[in-house]
Structure formats: structure tokens, C-alpha cells
Amino acid sequence: MSTSFPSPVSTWLRTLYFTRAAFSLIWVALAFTVAAFIALVVVRTKLVVPIETTPGTRVTFLVCLTVPQKTPCVGIGKSECIERLTFNPAYIRSFFGDSCLENAELGVEAAYGGGFFVDEGLDA
Image (spheres, rainbow, N blue to C red):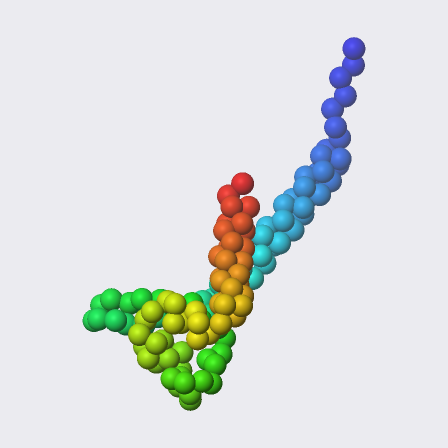
């Protein structure tokens, strides 16, 4: 029986091919991680409003991108509007609208989920 060993050139070519494939996977994973992080920051900045209730205590509320221009929130920002709605989740949901808040929830879940799946993919 004769045993053949791969030539040094074929071994070098195979190593080069797998090294390039690994680097391309790393770049793809890095791009997805950066995109997920940017999406998370944008969604968190635009849709989540932190309000300080007492010194040192903050509560966060999920809101729509824009404040509906109706009483009691005409011409004011999101956080002051929520304060005027007395922090009641039912009032806030009624004021901003169910479909708008459902879209906001979906955006937050997608941003957090995308970051989770990218992180889990990198751990594998």
C-alpha cells in the first residue's frame, strides 16, 4: 500500500482558501453586529422615553415617533406629555394609539432580537 501525502502547494492553497473564508465570515458577523447596535441605539433613542419620577428613580415608557397634537399634549415633547397623562399606561396607550405603540414594540423587539441573534451567532 502506498500512502500519498498532499503536496505543500495544495496544502498552502487549501489553508489560504479557508483563511479567506474565515475572514469573510468575520467581516459579515462584524457588519451585522454594528448594524444591530446602530438599530438598537436608534430605536432606543426614538421610541423609549425615560422620566425621572423621584430623585434617583427613573421609569421608561415606550412611545411613538411623534406626539399626537391633541389635548393635553399640544406643542410639547414626549416626556412632558407622559407626565401630563399621569404615568397611567392605559392613558398613554389610548393617547398614542394601539397600532402606533404595537409598531414601536415590534421595532424594539426586532432591534433587541437582532442583537441577540448576532451575539449568539458569534458565540457558536
